[in-house]
Length: 354
Image (tube, rainbow, N blue to C red; front, top):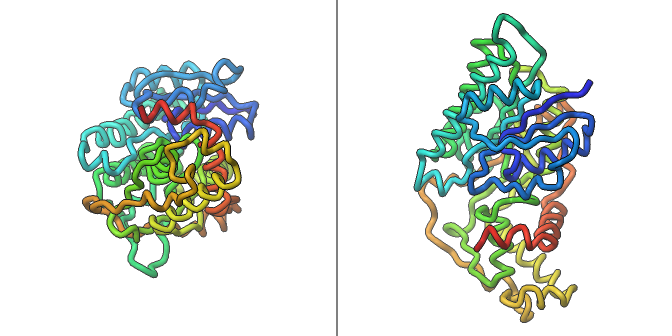
């Protein structure tokens, strides 16, 4: 039976990858892409899908209750996948208000509208509200500590992670209080195509190509678990199709890397690509790689940011054991695919940097 999905934040990084993935895997389903098109939302991310049968784009804010409810009703939505969020930690430190508005108030607005649509008027239809969250709600891990598990105590350390923690609790409350059929996933750091170039990997990648400094916080020892974005989409698919209602699943990549090692690997892969393809030097003459120098020469250590969590890592045993999930990509293979995409899509990222 075909589903009707509303995907919030569908023009953003992970949301766009998800709608492309879902369309390939479930072409019979109807997808409604819902996005406010803030700075990180780019309609070009989903342009290839627009105009196709079974795909609609709605330009609207998740904080607009009337618009959310009208969209749910118009398209007979039975599955809501909630990606929309302010997500950049540095921005949350300098301007936390937007994070509270979007991540807390916006999520609550969606929950209210979903409750009215699916449970209002005494009716009850089969449905699922899936909430996409982050491992940052759990705080920071000490060296050698086991990865975050689903019963982990919440200890958010930034306005961003605190706002996501609040939204997680609201989703749980709407399940236990009103019977809304929900699920939640907390993922590790994503990377891959369409990643807005303010985050570590696309920032360093595009800076190398333009010959600009590669800023590394502190001494670069902060550790993250990295998840290729399509592997994340596969995990959400597992939860939507087979996950238990009311359950939380941690989705990780089994790829712990410190920031400096990531930047080194990125530099080395680009050094190799430039050596193999002389055409790259003509396309990106500002890059040190174009002159045969190492991209590592661009690394610049900068003052650490406030409240910088030292280590994140995911224990993904629940989704692995219960739903048979495992990431397909290693960090090296996923990074290789990411580099290839950015080199092939200069017309996508150049305008974002101007």
